[in-house]
Image (cartoon, one colour):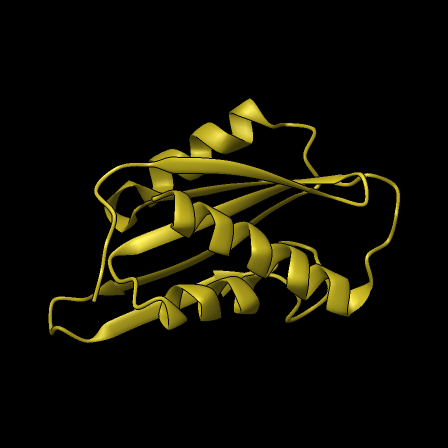
Length: 122
């Protein structure tokens, strides 16, 4: 299992929509979410996914689509974290809508690509 010790940020642009992915330690989740909502008040979505160990050494996972169609953003982001073996880590993807609808498959690819890119940077 792998984890991150600091925040990493990348930006992916797909069909005029901008996806800003932040990968960071899970313990900073509330602070980073608050900061990103202040930094990006005009963003349409703040999608997140995280995986961490609880006090019983069990893996706890959670994600949110934050208004995107169900299962098109949070779940794919969580699957990337799990597939890369990341634990005690969280990712928040801020999306600015560019005016072109991506469709459900396009959203899954876009969010997965954003998370994969920020993991590669880390």
